[in-house]
Length: 263
Ligand code: CO8
View (spheres, rainbow, N blue to C red):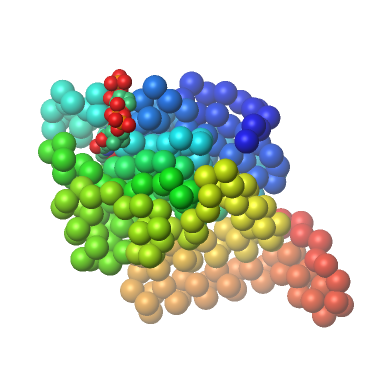
């Protein structure tokens, strides 16, 4: 699928189709491996979209052949422990984690290592039948470092996460679906179409409620239930200060379609 390209970075392609945006990872010569430069561009682009009032949902895809084959191994091969600490490669991952708008991963082909971790940092994962997920870092002498041991375990449970992380085994899209790692599996030619459909549904909802709901769901990973419930209640109360809450409830009572202001 071809999109209008609003801004071209070196390693990603941004297409704004307001109220949604599509970011395509673009390092085809290296299976979209996540170089430091690519990750820095991705984090900056997402932050810009987070501040962009015309965009309500973002899709991250690798295009039709591959999502991402992991962090760039060639960039890391001769790094020492001190180099890795000094480079602080995880700062960009923390920036992506802080994005408030919903992010959907549309995954064709390999989503391995950092590629699988990037898909998992997204809020929804649409997999094409060609998708393959895995944390193969064990095969190159390391381990997942961008959330693979944590997010994967929360998605598929301890024993399955151990199997993937300790053997480096890949999962097919169907297996990923059975294990609860992805939302849906679709034919390759409609993967981006389905992601866009979902993004548009989400983008058509009142923006503040979407952002506060995403924030509350994500808190369930960090907080014990009693604290999570308090957090949820705080966000619920907050929405009663929004114009869209008044509009949504009035429209329901008046049996008409609400007109959202995003305020
Ligand atoms: N890094 C750099 N280059 C890569 C990577 C990668 N991760 N993956 C593939 N490439 C390159 C290959 O070197 C090759 O380049 P060239 O043509 O110059 O030799 C080109 O892409 C095509 O790759 P292959 O020839 O290997 O393609 P195949 O179809 O035969 O195999 C595979 C595809 C199975 C995906 C294979 O390329 C592979 O196993 N790749 C590595 C997968 C992997 O181990 N990923 C984990 C990396 S470590 C990681 O992600 C840690 C994340 C932690 C956070 C990072 C913060 C720093």
